[in-house]
Image 1 (cartoon, helix red, strand yellow):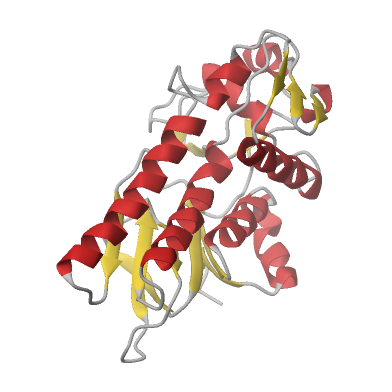
Image 2 (tube, rainbow, N blue to C red):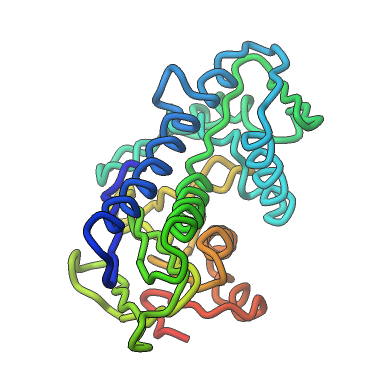
Length: 281
């Protein structure tokens, strides 16, 4: 998951607690093995190495590709899993390097879902194209882990947190919520707001750790796949609460891609959200 992962359990016998943690960890590692672009044995690596060949996907992989295609449509092309190749010219490490337009244009020739042939479960990319499921994989893993843990200890209350993406299935016995802090964009480790969560998912998107600072301008790692450039005037951070972590992650992503219109988008969605530096709503 490229981030710290944890399972917080309210109260359970040690043997059961170990089973719950093991189930969540197994989910995280399985999704990592299967969908990481960094592993040579993953489905994503097979797709990215296909060199124009058609690939027949298993049911789970096909469902994720379908979901990604839906997000592309909903975002009017701003979100696109083929845009991951832009990492060849963008490095969001807090440095100051910004690629030239010609460098971006060269990579953009390999970006665009409209270039992909997708007839579920058969996927065919143009030679040189790649996909990256990093924008949706972690939230999916959180919900899957929550479901697995619920199957082992039905009714138990626990909080699953994979790098700030959170799921809670059941309220605590005393009725008190889990308290989840939203980290301040400018002050690592400091909570700017505390969300009280009894059931559902929470996801955050922002640029506190992944950005470029060039000539006084901050470029977020969230790229508009239509242009190859980071989204202009996006909030520093958006957190959304929803029924599932996947739903919350979808809304944070779509909102971030709206740039300065992010809050208008979230308000229209009816979701509960928090934006930095704006006050929470």
